[in-house]
Length: 179
Image (cartoon, rainbow, N blue to C red; front, side, top):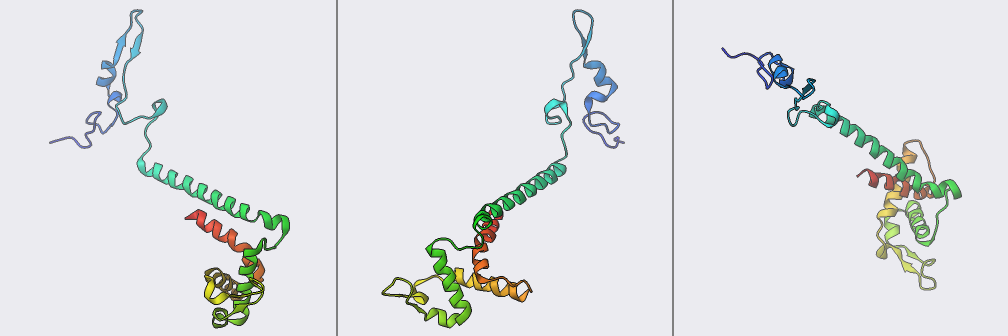
């Protein structure tokens, strides 16, 4: 009848072949001065740096996942803080011309509705000619800003449309960092 738990080391279930008495006596050699030197070499694949035992893969996997989660959270926080730097310095202010037009378009959509937005001819853009905004712009940014504005108001956290438009780059920058 075969012995249970037979591994590399012996029949007692000990996986280390150097810990058996037979292996320990065979791995000791003597030098010229009579001192005994242990010449045991750990089996390949069983030890890492400094003769430390290998950690089980499942524990390494959990450690790796934990470290990655912490790094992703740090990256999210950094991405959010970088985008909010101008808000901390200058306040909730829309900078430059293109974002200002998108804010005006979102404000028009919020005030007048979806169908009026697509038939809107803006006389303040491209002066003196004007611009047919509904047929010349992609309305995704305006729709998203109005939807977030209304969702926050419905959730009991009212925020002005200006603040939503200012904070959207920080929110979506953090989301893009996470993906």
